[in-house]
Image 1 (tube, rainbow, N blue to C red):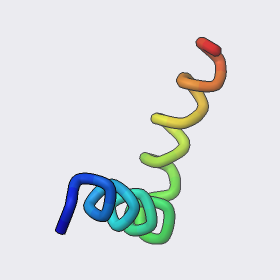
Image 2: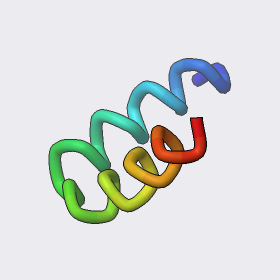
Image 3: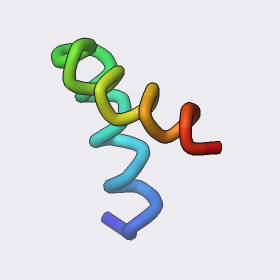
Amino acid sequence: ATAKEQRIVSIEDVDSHNVPYFSLIVVPSKTQL
C-alpha cells in the first residue's frame, strides 16, 4: 500500500477502535491551529 493508503487505513482503524486515542491526537492539533 502507498503512504496515502496506509494513512487512510490507520486513521479509519484508530477512529473505529481507539476513539479516545484518536481524539488525543486530533484535539491538540486543532487547538494549536
